[in-house]
Image (cartoon, rainbow, N blue to C red; front, side, top):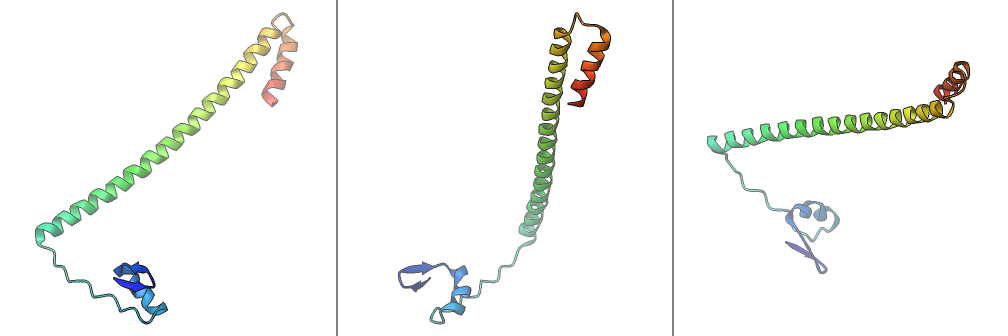
Length: 109
């Protein structure tokens, strides 16, 4: 840790602070880590699982958005058919030509 005034700086900020505040020491070199074949295989397995999880997450998000869109379409279609049904009930005693002209008005709107 390096202290600038009363602020303690973590090691990963030291490289940037060194350019701004020349009094800060350079960050120490990270130790070289060598992976054993077992740990390397485990890292590769975990990486593969992470890629698969990301792909599944993307598919789920896409499916969810598609379902929301379909729900909106169904809701709007239901409202449309409710309007048509109430219009047909209102003009139930009228002639079919008047009902057909009313149908055209509802469809255009």
